[in-house]
Length: 481
Image 1 (cartoon, one colour):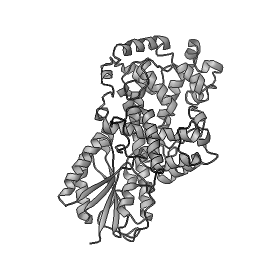
Image 2: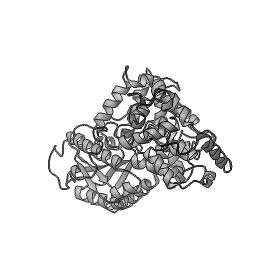
Image 3: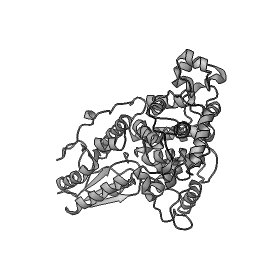
Image 4: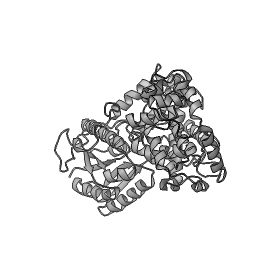
């Protein structure tokens, strides 16, 4: 039997700079197969909504085509849950005659437990699960990525400084090449395990016109954004303006499922900064800093399992007496709070499966501070709706906004939705795009329409008074902080 290796694709749906794929193909003349498991019940348990599920399936289809060009068949299987994967993987290994399964680490708690079960299942072949760090530029458990006392970081700024020192010390961030064309099996050649047809999966085409699947599209977005005339040059000035097309890279969905390498993004950002790694406040390095935030939240996730259990990072913040008001929560989800910028952001999410990052902070602060509704409700709703839903970043962002997380904003910092609107959508272009009731409102009224205007246009009046809500939040947090 021809020597065979199996690559298990998870949140790494690409061929460029894929560590597990590169390792499986390196100095190996035998056959390489790929496998991807769709786990619909597990996805629902992890709050993946139809938009993200469909996007993942489109990216798997694109990956399948790219791997075919390398003579690497990708087998797609649907099993209900993670617990069904160990037996299925063992079955594949026996059928293909392979003993080594290559995969990239996933750092969430359930995913780590699944991998332990796979290791146990393969031992009886005997086989091995070979795991590699790939989701980040530096491994989250990098031995030098530690505080002066040897602990894990919980504050971003010193983490970033240490990150830069490590990168400079090792001469940059390395990337892996696309594997060379395999000699066997030939493209289209039959083999013993058939793949399930991807077109049969539900949600595959949802929002496909807005979010095309696949690494090639992600690479084109990266190139366009980081070219000399691309959005990265003015990113530090434009990133907070939601109405501005091209102000952000829109790569977050592709990063979330590994359809593009974070190391390629980091290198492209540094290249746009003339190859200089520096903690600067210009466009390229401001964008690179956002990549490092992603690294930071994975670092925190790995060393603090409580956040995988829906617990606040700050234990005392589990005592916040949240309001369990389903009616207010529904108005927030539907974009009917009577605060135009908040409503426009929530309607953007429902329409496109995505929300501008500045607005994520605004609406999260509004839910947790103005409405005193549990951040977990908002976190779960975002995961259900976002095409770029990513547990580490989503949890980190929500706990930052709710003042319950690591390096979070102070509880007394409460965004004023009106001033945020005037500052970042001064002409009201974004609001008018997503709140058609207000399309003919002009001047500063677009940010805070008079009550008579709201009633005449059928737009909701404010769900809560800003100043009263602020005082209530300060009193509530002050009692537990």
